[in-house]
Image 1 (cartoon, rainbow, N blue to C red):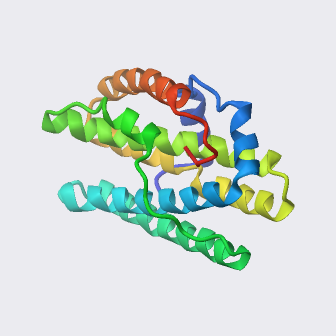
Image 2 (image 1 turned 135 degrees about the vertical axis):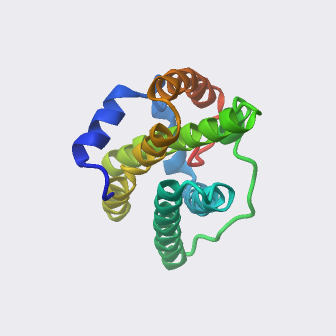
Length: 204
């Protein structure tokens, strides 16, 4: 990320710590039905790329955001291809899309006026990415199969800056105090979304 450093990202993660930890039951569900998990992970990578490109389409006058979102979209599609390649090697099929309960819960708190919606969408994307890297780290440390642990360790490092990137773009567009106030509100909503989402073994 050209305009940030590892220190910037680590400061962001410590400043906006998730207020609910992923349940230990989650990794057990992943172990029990890995094909479901990995298909959902692939779908989430593709959806993340589409969301990033939506920012490019909707906000073309924000040049820094366009550059950042386009880069993230490129990286997410690359991750989708990596996941899908591993799926094919092991015979795990892609599955039809299903509604993501966790994401829908978060999006239900996005406000409706244009500026508020713009800010909230950036911050919701940031929080989804932060939750994702928490789960990549769990997989890297706890999943039973070493090749997949190694893969998720690399993915964790690759994706770690995405949450910071959306937050950082928000601070370029909106007053810092406004971004921080809304981020703290959404952290509470994110914790409830995590706690209220049934543990099925999907990525979220």
